[in-house]
Length: 365
Image (cartoon, rainbow, N blue to C red):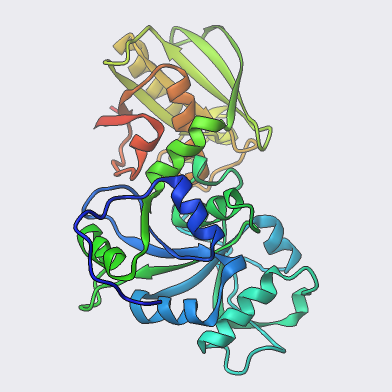
């Protein structure tokens, strides 16, 4: 990959331009959004990987070379999760690392890593063709891609699929010379230096939302509870068939900052009021606060009636697979600004991708 003199007008590329770059076997730089403090990854389609591309990533990125794949591909290669318990659902889903047996020696060289990635995509490759552990780190993307979890893992799979290639990517975090993560200004300089297109995951989310949606509203009906009168909206995820619910109170305009609670289902706490769960009573508390406010939404994200571990924090929807779906539900309900009910404030990168702005967090009192 040949360096070139920086231009004076580097801007973020369009998603259509990025798709064509991948189709032609070229690499991208991808950040969450245009914020100057964001980190970036090199990203390319796994179908187009070469030893030269791996060497470039290792030399100039310095991060871990990972291969995002679908859950179906992981199952076909019998790639188990690296950590089965205690994993943070907001983090990437690593599998056991691998090397291809026949085509690699140490497994660490650029040709070896490229060969392992190529064999991962081959229809003839079997699960026992790989050594475990190895030097390539597969990541399992969530079904629905960036519309469910707006991360680099899902972005690489989505982009490869949009380019008409196998839904798998190769990514590598980009570090500065001092070992810290490179930020947008430095990433822009790197894009200029190596003539690479640079895009944001935020733009990819918007691109997909223009053409598709993961949700469908099935019904809306009055709902009477011990707390008060609400409207119950039933929503279905198109890709999974999962059903989620929104309890809404009052009316709002796009300028109103609406009180919102994102709640992850727990049958023992929500139905049986278990004293062993830290989220026992939280749902009712949120409903009472919204009833008192006279306006708001409780998003009830259904995990097949999952029973939460007693150590879970207050029942908030921790699973990032909820994030994009919940954001789309709020958007469909006409919300553009929100005040989030939570005792655990957190910054949600890319929330604006879904057309939403979090104005503030409000503690559950």
